[in-house]
Length: 536
Image 1: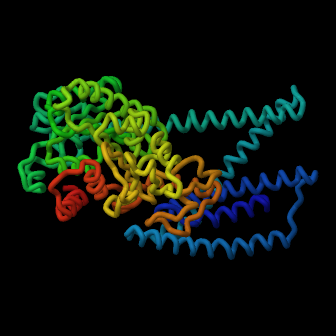
Image 2: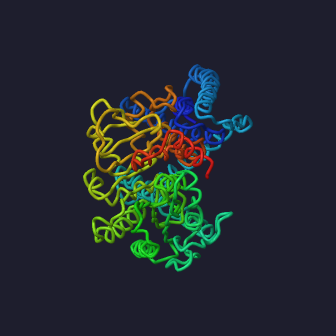
Image 3: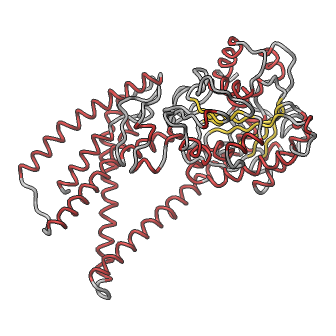
């Protein structure tokens, strides 16, 4: 262990305890702590090596005073920052209404950090030993400098191939196999539809067994005609729901075509409102969004979606982006092809929706603001990933003075953003005519803010005034913030609605703004929020 590396590890260990977007458990904090410490150690060793190169001298053993100063600093700084870290976590839990707190795991976090740090350090030293062995072997045939350079290239290339090939592909393969088995199950309490208005039901072109776990959940649930009539206090219709799973057809285009044919069979194009949904990774359609859409439109609706992966969103988010893009584009194009050939007076309102990776796929069918405005009657996207093409275009080109957490684009003439639609959708007082495009995004949603750019660049959403559910004490730290937000991703839905990546009641006010239904009172909307929050 080198002293410069130790100082680097100490510095980043302390900084890793600073707050990020979501509450952290003890094991997660230990993981972040260990990774940050390993990065700090490597940076410290690198900095010392560069300094020695400029000074043209060999490494020296640190003196007793230097070691004592380091040990005293570590003994003081680590407990202080550990205590501050627990205080910051307490504030975040209070802000979000999270009560879970496991003291034993918190006490265990330094142990987890030590283990993670040790494993990473051993891997690094193994790679260094491999480099020296390779360089010595090459030195017999080449010059010393050429042997060293070639050795680094070979070892770095081998490490890359192992990580991206063996480890990543192996992990994805195992995950795909595991979740494909789960896809063959049916959610508890869900039964095959007896209505011909649902895929998998009587006369459907899509077999019930081919719909997959999420597809069966989608067509086998939702508000009934009676549920909707009780909410609206007037006659309602039973909604149409069409779906095609991975087992329904061989590829994305074929699944889209099949879902649209089943939509036609069920009379979906004769409804007043037609919604095209791009699913999340596993084929999930957020019931809070679709149920709300059906309630507000009095059941005079049809919704269509297809599955493109077995993997859950947090894995698909990293490896299935191309599949999401193809699914969103192929499904909308298939629907639009039929819709555009209908007599103009007989066309339903055509709407688009998607959450998380579904918003990424949903955007793929459109080239920009005018395309969304001209080819849809409204769009609602929730929790858009930071890499969404149109989301980034709208946010990066926002009007001067508007914050990244809630940007204003072109005076909000078509596209708008909100953290909480019940509290308002800026810009207030500006006209919002024609098709409305609305993005729902919580300030504390790591899906929205995660980006590799966090490694070296401070984003505007941290530099600017923080959102309502983000601590003012959150600061950007090179390397550290990236790993903190990365660790938030798998737990983004494990917080109460209204925070992180948990969107429920927001759909009521979001769809109300996009659909603009008539005859609803504030009491009706509050009633619907309660219905959606409790799952019906």
